[in-house]
Length: 96
Image 1 (cartoon, helix red, strand yellow):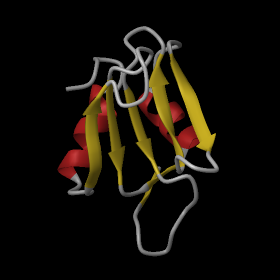
Image 2 (cartoon, one colour; image 1 turned 90 degrees about the vertical axis):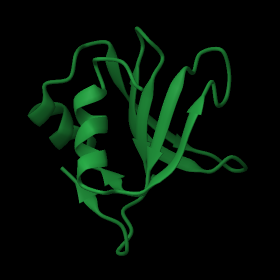
Image 3 (tube, one colour; image 1 turned 30 degrees about the vertical axis):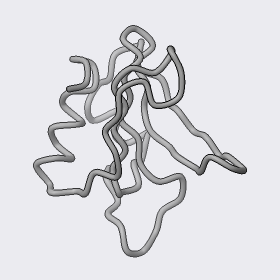
Image 4 (cartoon, one colour; image 1 turned 120 degrees about the vertical axis):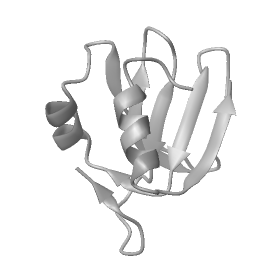
């Protein structure tokens, strides 16, 4: 569902059985295509190094006051994203 730049991460999270909070098409604006939010905390620096993410994949950290909080990766070529929780929670997995 997501672009080739985020496919490996998306597949890994799915195979680990991490719950999907939502999968949506253009969830916020025209600059968002396929966004998937998982119920986990993504260690961005560890994942970037391990998965050797392309330069078009940028860190996305959003701390909203109304819309919620999230942290993950956005592909600036295809506008897809894989995101997780903004902060690490004891009851949700840490993905490194």
